[in-house]
Image (tube, rainbow, N blue to C red):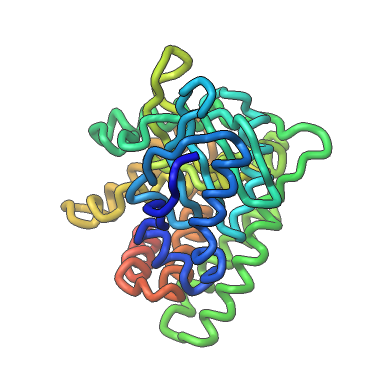
Length: 308
């Protein structure tokens, strides 16, 4: 198998995971070597800049030379859940999972064009493609599925947000607003019984939709954090896409509110529910960024939440 001497974690991953999983980071080169040998793969390169919760190695099957991507997931990003979601979608608007070793946090995925995401398109075209992609992901999760509900996923987040507000009274008003929005949403499920019914991507954004080679689909979603709930929860992450570009433009608040209106109309979700989930998810992300030392990003997210 190929040497893994140069298959070191990308800087983005190191910065994100050093406070949480330093042991896992240190063991990544040996883990990569283990999985290359176990699955008969030859390494080509580490995908750069990569993500914050996984390392992806571009590989080829040593036997037939077919391309693939070896993904090694951090402990807080269970490979088993991602694999279950990808197999449920079975290639419908999402990358295919070829193999999984959940005990090692390893996935072997079909290879996409990782350097080309929807963010490479003009904003209007990117949003159209994003909506088309995400709608196809919203399927029945199946009987006895392993996925957490939105209520379960956000419950732990809400507890962390309360603790952060107690430690930093300056953010308490925005945290209170976000938690109140969550309570309203969970107290009155979405119309049509979809409140806790559909399999969602969980971290859907333009950067999580990559160009695909071949005729199956031009764009495929990657990196799900699967959860079961209502479509408005998924769209809430998309609402703040390209946030830095929006902040630099004139009329950022009005532009954000128009985006909520357009997205809710495009997929027929209640705009008030989309607004509430957008507030909650932005403030929750701000709290996490602040805890990780990314103060500027945290402040941007809190400002975004006030526009809604």
